[in-house]
Length: 209
Image (cartoon, rainbow, N blue to C red; front, side, top):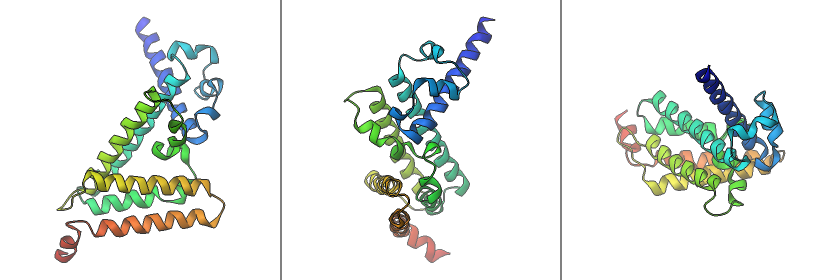
């Protein structure tokens, strides 16, 4: 019985973290109350502190969960293209810098969705640490995705690419409803796609095809 209760508690905890990962990206951490989070998982407000120390504790866990989702998505894209870095990178850029991603922050990139909340956090907070760890992982995953079949991408290039992607997405969301929003996405996407073709190995690959 105790084991079953523990498994049920773990399941409820995961459900709340999953709900928080979605709602925090969608509405911001301050825009979602604890009762809303618990209700989203089908639980009562009173049980929150049996699972989490505080809302801040949950925010850090939700942030990590959101970055884990993103890492899994990038890994899936990489596996689909079997080491073809240019093709994998192209798919990621076209998906990331799209109106669909702009309009669905709840299931999208936490780097863009949570940056405003994290920027206001105090130094050393659990959320800030979880976010920084997630961004480090995102940079590494971008570099890994872009490499393959004679291509390479160093840390600095991955950082620049991520900065452009996130900046464009944040601006596109902030200007949604104005034609500028779509123009921002298009300009960033075209610029980054153009740069992927100029990477070492890309020209050699085209000459041999």
